[in-house]
Image (cartoon, rainbow, N blue to C red; front, side, top):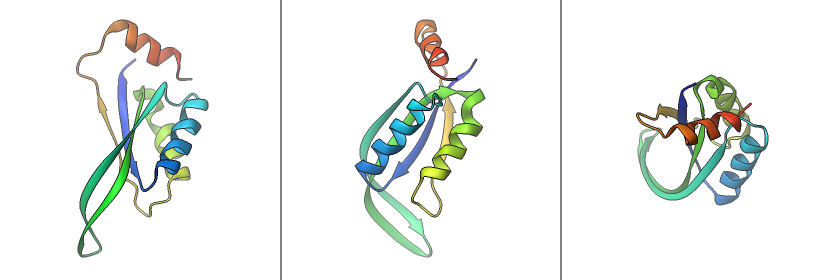
Length: 103
């Protein structure tokens, strides 16, 4: 089992919470963390600036496909940012907790 963090950004706290609850309740993620961020990005030929919410899901590499699909289904953006990274180091008990809380 490889523990990973899957990250996306959304436009509102309400959407972030709705997505976090849905994925944790479905057993796709052991937990989700929501943080407010300030984003600057290129979009359709212009530089945009806006407030967003980052949602970080702790899950396993085996769950990535299902979690990406769920995020796409729930997301309001035309092109949602969805990416993941593996934890280089993780305590064994915490990794076990992530694994036992994802199905």
